[in-house]
Image: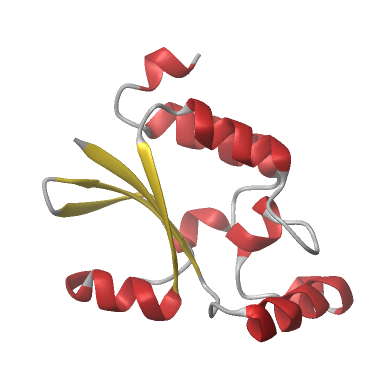
Length: 124
């Protein structure tokens, strides 16, 4: 059974979330997590993204930078943000941090995930 692993280049917690929201609002060009910028508004996950993930048909887990490094120590130095697939304990990048630079908006992100995810034909 595979899982979709979504990793934000951010810290977890209420204070970190508030600081991230302010950063996105006042200095979006320097915000370090393109995944957060695409999938979250100022206060919560975008509904379109949530519905997309609910329809993917595989378990989805979310991590922030520190807990990802703990959960996947072999990938602790991978650049973030990241969307990966975990299959039988193996983690494979689906969309790397570098690739996020070329993703312009949420629609493009969802199209790329659907195209690259194993079994994506059932998503169309």
